[in-house]
Length: 347
Image (cartoon, helix red, strand yellow):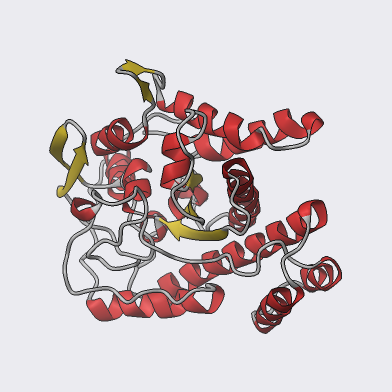
């Protein structure tokens, strides 16, 4: 079993195939990324390259830690193209996803609540990484959108029901930490690189006040402005979710035992079945303790809508309602990586 808080190998074959098909760098048929660590390092080096000369090594190290611990998954185009010489982006919108499952201790004896401070700090780092990507790509007015994947995995690892008041409360606490970290990151970058327009900033500060954001951040925002007025968005990121050892996409529930993942690439497609990150960890726990762990029952459509309602107060963009269809990574190919809405409907 992996330790999610250290540089860790894959635990899902489907995730390995997703990395190989969508994110692994090849140059004229030659492998340039020999391992996932090479991919993380390539991205970390590229994202830190726009920092002031004396700060490059510091930010490279911070980006590498966040990436290699699976806590931060940058925009799928950034992940595939950074440091390769290929165009970094095809439009002005960049996404990043924080992997909620990796803010819960793997040791069941230590599980009581997610590491909200760590999640908030990672959100602050995500703002910087995406702003750096926009600078690197020469995008003058980028739209940065930072969300969460693996919420259902985090709840399962804590033994909290997805369709429960406690589950919704834990998910909302993670969304609040996300919003707080994004606000902090926007203020820091406004000081370093300049703020957005006063009108946009005023509206964003009013929204932060209505959310009860910390007073020190509100004062700093009023004094320095914001680099980005709108940041939080829970959108479907099926390729990133599958890469992250097959966690649940965005606010969706677990997909259950032995679900299908169709991974399409230039050389064709493969169908690989997996159970996903949380069920793998729970099964390993059960094997260690001599017990069995049953997969949670599939939540109703109403439960999925209720989960979105619990998250929405902290999210700048409306969260799309789920569809009745029961699909997921099967729909995660086609279009630009990471930009595809799945039939499970969070984007």
